[in-house]
Length: 113
Length: 116
Image (tube, rainbow over all chains, first blue to last red; front, side, top):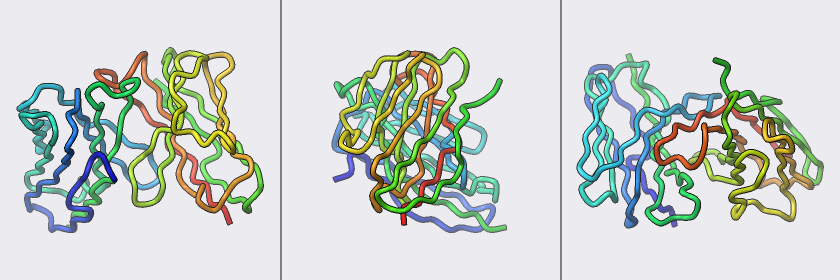
């Protein structure tokens, strides 16, 4: 079983639309990160959230960490073709071994012009 | 500032052959990670080094995978012998120190391995 479940797996939208992707778990996380990965490249960190209920904004991207620190969401406003990529959430499980990152399977986003 | 370097970028081998990947982290980064990313999945940690010591290798298939970071800088990951299910992208990442709680992990571009 996957510790971090991401949904949807695939998302294809038109430029200008809004979207939300989710990252859910039954476990509590000390922190949670969101990455974007483009084909042929490694993941690039977008944001780290640490406090339950925390909301962070990065231009058109809004990240939220659930109050219970078990889930997170990423909302993109007015998506652009440049937002296309694989969005990965990754968390440090509370009390987990070595504080290592556990990744979800990702949401593959395609934004058509 | 140079990023994490990996080579080769692509490798095709036949099953039962051996293969090695190389990673040079960002200068000054004490912690180095090797991940395996199978198509359609997120990265899975294989091994974590702190300087030249292994911190966590609990998910490394030690019967066929080995890794070293002898001088605490660059690192090699080896597979011997390779199996079909080892086909994946192997990512190297580094951070300044410690775990990822606050430190950003910087990833290299990966090595795409195809085992035929």
